[in-house]
Amino acid sequence: MASFTNQATLSYNGVSVNSNVVTGQMISPLSLTKTAVEDVYAPGDTVAYVISLVNDGSVSYDDLALTDDLGGYEIGTGTAYPLSYVEDSLRYFINGVPQSALAVTPGSPLVITGISVPAGGNAMLVYETEVTAAAPLTAGSCITNTATVSGDGLSTPLEASARICVQTGAELSIVKSLFPTTVTPNGQLCYSFSIQNYGNEAAGADAGITVSDLFDPILKNISVMLDGQPLSLGTDYSYDQSSGKFDTVAGGMTVPAATYAQTASTGDWVVTPGEVTLVVQGTV
Image 1 (cartoon, rainbow, N blue to C red):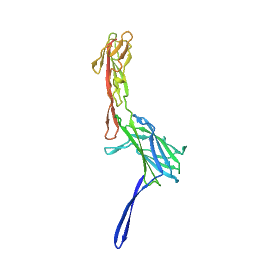
Image 2 (cartoon, one colour):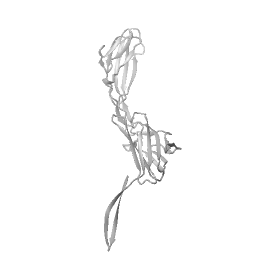
Image 3 (spheres, helix red, strand yellow):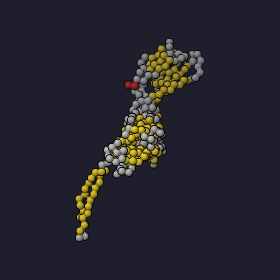
Image 4 (cartoon, rainbow, N blue to C red):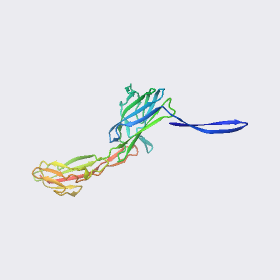
């Protein structure tokens, strides 16, 4: 809604007198809303957006243009874009009926032209975006994405935004290694387990983390360490020397959250996972 002001001037006998200032509102019958189909995101996710244009007036709007800023934000001397348009994903409807493709200028920002909204009707655009490496990942981070519609018949452009926030939680992976890779009977064998957390929250006791394995060949007289600290049989882990079955006690380890650093030149985020190392050593 745009406001306007107006003032008159009365002139007589070389004298000018100003009237009072009147204020009015320019109400557009066209409204714009933008909705994210998902309200959370993770690295590499696809996020769909719905653009809705409703025309309550008696005159159609034609050849409108929509610009989507894809959540762009300034960094250094440039702009980083946490979202990118998924090619050929745009769908266009008028009064619920699918229409032929609109002209799309992909890139950042995204530009869509040729949009029409009939009198007393509506138009809807649905398209997908992909989360880029410039999307913030620290807990509590969000992306605010703004669409702007402009064109003939609009005294001022229409704007609407949608906000999505990063998914919060732990994201664990495990890598197992063996040393040495060749061993003789009664030789020493060492298994190392690297547990990494790429998420933005630590995985603590409430996560109930366990590491289980069935050692073959069976290890005898094992010793177990977590990040260099010895663990106790029965308290921190269980082991059946007759079968080789090994299990850590649920919730007995905490894997810290990942840390994130942003590259100033590109805006890309670099993830350093939180990590703990479990080592099991014994005789074959």
